[in-house]
Length: 470
Image 1 (tube, rainbow, N blue to C red):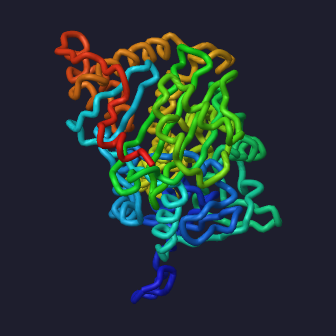
Image 2: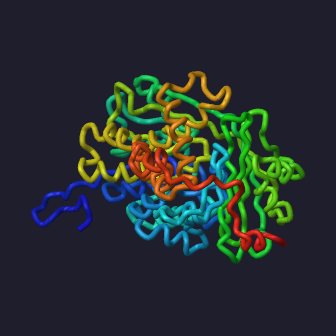
Image 3: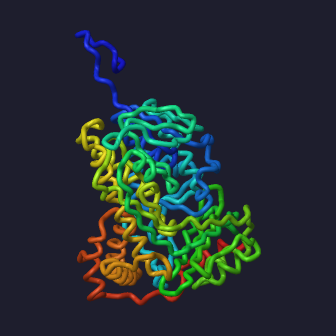
């Protein structure tokens, strides 16, 4: 029987609540999936969304390397069962961390390729990831897309948000509005326009610049399970420089190079390989120097860590929640954005399973629940990036300095001990809180061993090196 129609007693059935999500980003789509069990959802998107795995104007960062940590993989499948298998079926790979990775940590230690942990990382292009998520969420009859619409303001008063107004002056009403509009979110201004206080913000900007080029996988690597290759920047040696080779679908490699202030890569295609060869280890440059480029070099400087502390505001309106990069954007080198988006959506779903969407105080409960994965990713990113000169107006706190130093020791231990590596990956993948680093799995090998010697170079096998030769 349709909701809102007369029942057998002649009474109207309860009206199904309505939710409006601002932004058709990955965060917005995950939020819509979480909300669909409790409300009729409308996704309001400024752009016209494409069909299939092709670039779109509103996601320029999609051109650069992306991955989804195991904490995000688990959250995606919990939110949309079978989603990860569907993405893999379209050409993505689930790789073993660190067994299918050749990775040098920021402290310049190479990780051994242990296979003793359960952690899996999803590798594919951002276009493919977005496309499959978009298809899956928008196939739900409870979710409607309103594309080509720009939201300009919130409707309501300081105590409650009742909807939004678009740039044509049209008002869209909803019981809950979720801002998932990304780094460019106007929520701070929208809230002050309703008479609410200014949100506290913090920025930590390592000054990182990205340069990315797409390559055809060289030699026979397109036919083999070639590992992800990563040389991470060392914040103790400014400028920090790093690079990653991300094998993706259709026999391609995304190669992203990065450098902080004074050591940034450029968009010059003739300088791309030389920059890669000049990293702390030349392995990325050596692997791509004879590969065939498939694109120009694409650059970005939008890599600052920026957080808005909505959860600390003294007043918060009912009917409103902010998620994803609109709350906190991270240096993309850590790969946590999509994982946080999925985990925040799960947090929304968990709250709504216990609290009616329209109940007083639900907006604040949602905001506080969604901030938990945000805080975990923020602490990991800022602990590293705050060490770069000029990264922040405020120096790292004593706690941030302690955690940063301890993480360095944890990385050094995990690089050569599988038990410690499992604890480290639990935290880095956002599956468990940072307190996991103080467990026996980490502390016993850290303090007492046994300790294998650190590797002196990248752990590529001879077979892999041969496969990469043209």
